[in-house]
Image (cartoon, rainbow, N blue to C red; front, side):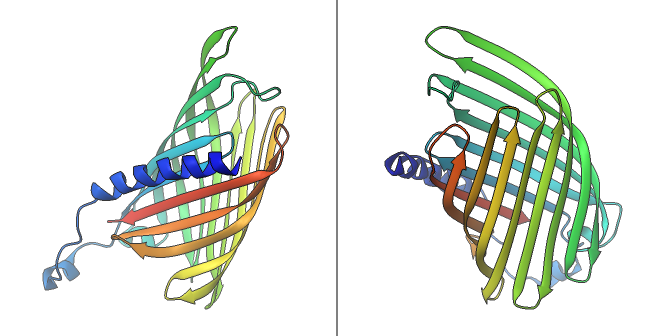
Amino acid sequence: MAWGVAKRTGMLARAVAATVALVPASPCADPALHERSPLSLAIFGSLEADAAKTYGAIGLKWAFGSSGGLDASGFRLGLKWGESVEPAQRKPTEGRLYKTEFHAQLGYEWRIGDTFVSLSAGPEVEARYSETRRDRSFEQRGALRLQTDLWSKPHENWLLQANAYAVLADRGRYWGRLAGGWQLFDELYLGPELEGYRERGYHKLRLGLHLTGLHLFGLDWRIAGGLQKTSAEKAGAYVTLGLHWKR
C-alpha cells in the first residue's frame, strides 16, 4: 500500500513541476507596479493520492464588485475542474472508475480583520466512466453545490482553516476539512488537519499534518499527509499537494 502511494506521489511531483514551468517569472521591481490595482485573481491547483485513488484539480477565484480585490469584502466567481481515478467496485476491488467534474460558483466573501468567510453556490456537472471485467457504463449528472470557507488568524501566531461543501443530488456528497496551524516563520504554518467525506454507501475520514504557506517558485504551497480510513478499505496513508498564485 505504501509503495502504491509513493508511486503516485512521484507521478504527482512530475505533474506539479510541469505546472510550475508554465507560470511566468515574477517581473523585476518597478515603481510603476505600485500603481496597479489590487490583486483580484487567484489560480489554484491540487493533487492528492492514497492507496486506491488519485485526484487532480485546477481552478480560479475572481474578485469583482469592489476596489480592494481579494483582500477586501466583495463578490467572488469560482470555477473548478477535476479528474480522478479509483476502483469501479470497492468490495472486492475491481476495475476502474474515471470521474470528471466541473463546477461554477457565485458567492460573497467577507473580511473582518484577519478573518475571511465566504458563502457560494452554483451548478456542478459530473461525468463517470466505469470499466470492469463484466461491463462498461457511462453516466452524467448535474446538481447544486453549496460551499463555505473560513480562513482566520485568531492570534498572530495561529492559523485556522475550515472548508465544507454539499452537493445536493440523488447521491448527495458531503465534505469538510478543519485545520489549525502554528506559525513557524513569516506566513509558514504547521499543524493538524481533520477531513471527512460521505457519499451514499461510502465514507472516508482523514487525520494528518499540513504545512501551509510555503513560498516557492512564485507560488504558495500546501503539503499534507497522514492516515485515512474508509468504509471500503483498511487504514492507509494519503498525501496532498496544493498551490495557489495571486495576480
